[in-house]
Length: 396
Image 1 (spheres, helix red, strand yellow):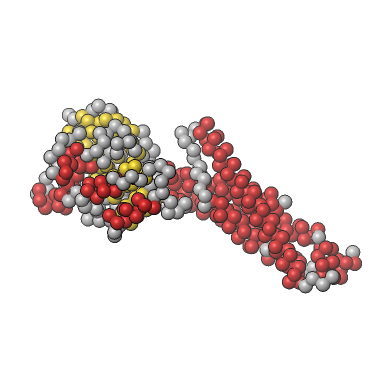
Image 2 (cartoon, rainbow, N blue to C red):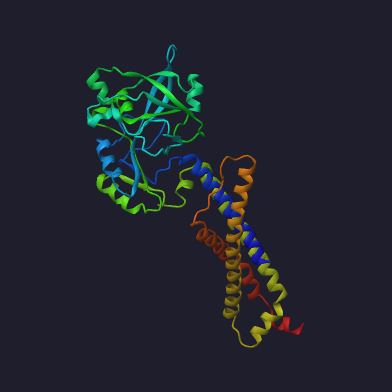
């Protein structure tokens, strides 16, 4: 009974935690990059853009030095700026969040938006002169396209409503504008990046020229994707050498990093944790108490042949925790199977992709929760053992 009840509780804990991790990954980890390089005190992609926040400079050169490594698939700086955009001939501008990137040779997904329809490289940068040919390409997300009433192939006028500090100083508050053509409309889920603003993507140097970030070749962060099957350690070291004071975030830093970064997922996983500990403790305490009540004569016999109270308590404690551990292992197996079934049912019915994520850290996490519940449940069965009347039980 103890093994079955613990296994059921732990299996449900793993399934709920896996779904929470899946929700967090969907909302905060839409990019495929393995490494995120952030400047101290800045670099967070947000719809609230602070022009005084920390940024990297000379990002084309430094990102290129990382990108040339054999173990790196691509490295791209990412600049985010609030801009204004309107369809050609329209009288009103719409405010959107623009993301400037250097599209790699192999299309990648960055913050949920694919670079497949953008020309690889960044020709307008022209080795820092910013006089190269503009591609005139821009990718619209579905929310941006709906707000602009635009579709693929439409011409759009892009301008910066709030020039950066350097641009204000050197160009007397005059923003620059350019005509772009929508290459595609990306169907994306809402995420924490855009907030209330729709999102568009274009080449980094072209966004820099529009917003004034070309003065120092600025970007908010650098994303690095390593080659399949290679460790991220060497690439992390290279990024740290390139940016000694930067914060290096890796997908392997913490299996629960995505859960911590998403409030809803964090709340769901915490509720599941608390409920699992409480229910598991009650199950273990109840089943152990029933076992002790059934075996009181055996406990009395142990006392009669010389087992001290401490020895009898130790026997019950070890037995209870061993059964709890066995239930936890069984629960892990059931939880893994449950996540597979959950994803299969979800994708077969309504979800476009698996909704639950299985992480290696779930195994020690679940076993630790079960053992904690077992320890919390011990006082009650131990109390029953200590209160057993040896003479009365042997006389029955």
